[in-house]
Length: 423
Image 1 (tube, one colour):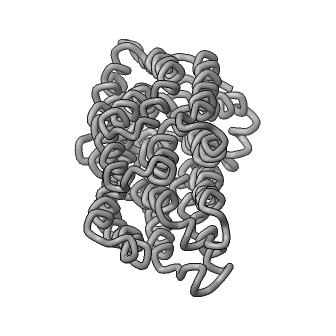
Image 2 (cartoon, rainbow, N blue to C red; image 1 turned 45 degrees about the vertical axis):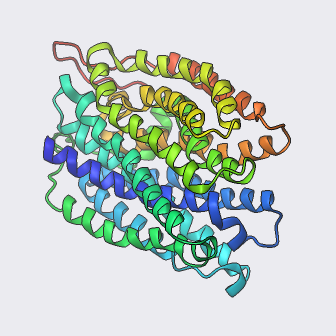
Image 3 (cartoon, rainbow, N blue to C red; image 1 turned 120 degrees about the vertical axis):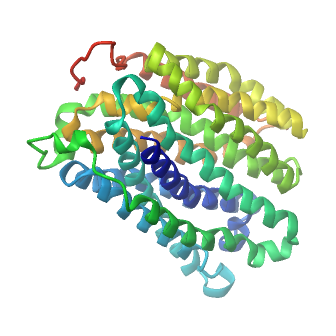
């Protein structure tokens, strides 16, 4: 289990590194380089628009890779998704700017971002299911949390590289070539991830299935449509919080508040370190107290903290901004640390790879794709404190709270019980 969990964590970290490095670049440099004819705010919105395309592609990746994950196994999905995401990320670092090839530059950026999202849409389902279906029922929450640490590690890797480049290069050097380096690094990381995953074995739960779904998506739509919609709505707050902290606030702090890139990245990264380190502990609590209660607690905390978070951000003081980000990410981790066990337990094994991944990634469209765009637009028409952003995030949290309230508990009891399959 330790080797399997470590390999899943490493692979997930690499793929989320690829995804996050684009978000950081979108907040810092992609607007002027690829949309120079736009105003600064419009350029940032356009860059966040290409960022959002990756989220739109993720449910499609869930359908594509989920089909093969339910038909052929979880393990092949991990290799194929890693190859696709890694190759498209390296290619982003090679795209010439608008000044070199004109409108073809943002078009290429859009296509490659779509391919990134397609690959990541398959990654989460394969990595989490392979770990969850190997894990003993009484510790499924703990072991399934390892892939959930991957996004934090990937974020820290992406922003650590960006932070180092930002601190050592001039603004001109960073805009000319420095921002491309993290994308090229993705190639080496992808090769390392493929090596780690070469020794993984197929999920025993998948091998036990006698009658595999012929068209998993059709079964999910027919029998589990309500569950997919509820999980997507429930997870939207987590995405909204995470990308409000890591992407929108980075652009807001540097452009509107005049805080340096290095200071903003350091504040965000420090909060993500705490969030990542607490993930196994929260997941362990879910094995004892249940998945659903922690999700409800995290949603309620998020609804209460969004206004304080934007107020602390607006101060521009590093310590206060860190505290605002930390409170938001603590609410986030209370929900998302348990999802590696919760989502697979909600779906029956024959369509689990498709159903769990589609619900997870649809939540990304609702929360992750829209939040940087909506928050940027709301902050542009507000005062120094972006209260409109706080209201928007609070509304998303209350919506997700209602969705979680309609989902059942799935934590296995002390005695063996059949795995639930609800529609």
